[in-house]
Image 1 (cartoon, rainbow, N blue to C red):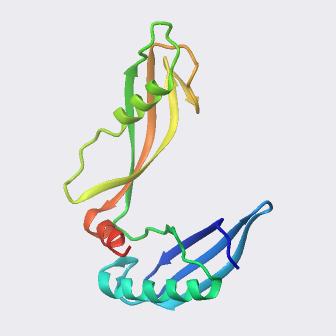
Image 2 (cartoon, rainbow, N blue to C red; image 1 turned 90 degrees about the horizontal axis):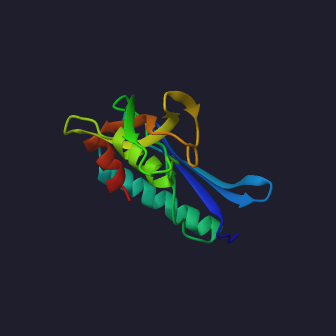
Image 3 (cartoon, one colour; image 1 turned 180 degrees about the vertical axis):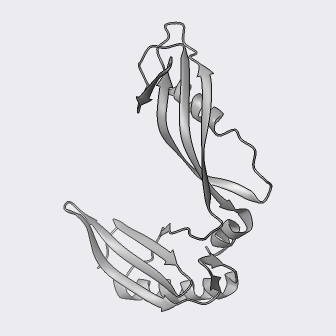
Length: 173
């Protein structure tokens, strides 16, 4: 059952570790294989024993390779636990072009500006989501490129967690 359009999802839970492999088709995603193993080394949704969880994942992905006939190249990983946090942030810039047209570069700059915030050294942001752009005080804009204005603002939602726990997830692979 070889295909190069496979998408895999991994859920590392306190009780079970689950993997779902789906094939991309013109009609959407078609599940082709799923596996669930008893979890060890996970407490309250957080990997606390990297070696133990890594061993379980190795066994799971060996079974998957044997069953579907190909190695999984990438996987979407569920991140959970009470250590996660989110908070809004805002960035503001002046539009750089003389004709006041907002460019992709302006959007990149305002998003970078919105990501400047202070965090404790043991916490990190791993994902940011632009919520809206504001051009000269007018909000609710999803894509400001090409609009005219002198002031560009971006509101984002930053999502992060406790760095040691996030690093444990990275160490698994």
